[in-house]
Image (cartoon, rainbow, N blue to C red; front, side):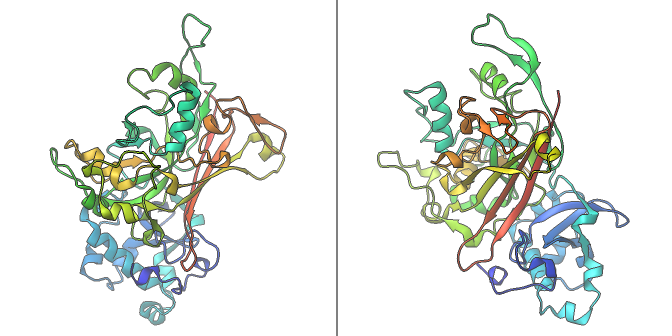
Length: 436
């Protein structure tokens, strides 16, 4: 915790006060492009504005570590900033926070400071913030794993290894897209249980998965593992993730090697990366395991992880169909879950991923898997919400949904709030389904 977390700190940027995902206590990083002001470059969200970090560097008011970080922010991805390490990320965030405070010496000295360093979000295009080298998706929610397992193995929903290690699979980095990118309905092999052979056709079981992703800042050399105590030093920040899934394709193809074409056609991420430093006021103990559950093995356990390995992020999913838009109806929220319900922490996922010597690199992404809680309203995908289609959702137009239809838009949001702190958010992660 430091002065940037002070809930009493306010900004001279008026839209950063009141209800916003991006108060001065947040300051997430992203990449944007705006008309007439250069190529894609790094920005920081503040209210309804974007701080052009390169423009801040030209003011000459940044200290050495922050200036070094700002110098790589005229590039079109965050990877170069990530490579510099936590000291530089933190220094840049702290000095931008000071620049934006209501009593900033720079603002008092220059009433046109906003014109020099701010770009309205309404005039900017938000881009994929990171050049993602590799992408791994975990399965960290015990509630999600139990629900899905119950559909296929009612007598034994959790496989024997689940409570011993974070289960994951390698996803496809090339099909990661920024929020707002339309998603084409995929085609694949579908096998009806009563048919002798599969057919090739558009999926009839298109689903979303509400997840949180973590971007790696500092990597590790091939052959060297990262101990759990050092994992968080290498994490740059978090974003929202929609791991789109074709459930019928998945059912046919996943045995014996797991997800493939059912998952790799698209993964949507939110454009703003909320730093771990900004999330410090919302750290909580790791998930409390049930009596009788095995304790994590030593390489997945530490006192610090037990005491503050969790992050209390609330995540919400809303749907808006083409029919709802035509009728002028607003989106409908269908679920609300919490990262606090994840069985495995981010540090455990990171440490496990590198435990065999696998090398992370700056810009790699790993995600939590579907975030689901113990109640039905906290189920983070339609597979669970509709119980594999047996309990369809009813929407305000009278439409029902077992899985997603063409024209449906999925809107994901995330935020953190706690008494005595400033509420911060992640913005939105959106995608509309296009026909096959």
